[in-house]
Image 1 (cartoon, rainbow, N blue to C red):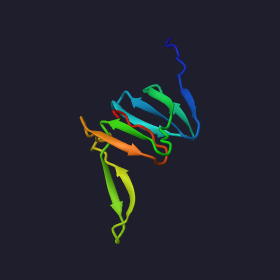
Image 2 (image 1 turned 90 degrees about the horizontal axis):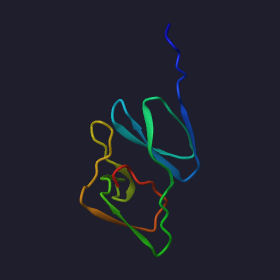
Image 3 (image 1 turned 90 degrees about the vertical axis):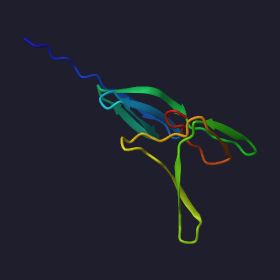
Image 4 (image 1 turned 45 degrees about the vertical axis):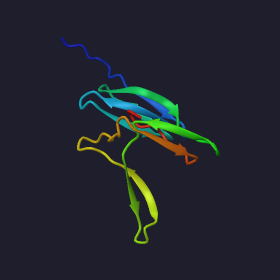
Length: 116
């Protein structure tokens, strides 16, 4: 007679301006989840970082980010920057500029991707 094992689910409530990294052990991919939300981790998912508060840079301050993500800047027909999109590889992981540093000045709060 086989025993029934109850599935263990982990439910995490993310507040606004918080984030966490969840690893899918089947595919070995890490995804970034940004709050506010409720996250249900299944049996094959594991929280590897967080929940942490997003990085907020006050006026007249800066942050140096090592191994920053590669961003693609989208612009309109006039050449004005509309937004920047994080570049992903074929598997859905973010691409990083290893060994590089990026200085970020006052801006809206942002999460750190896996590897930054």
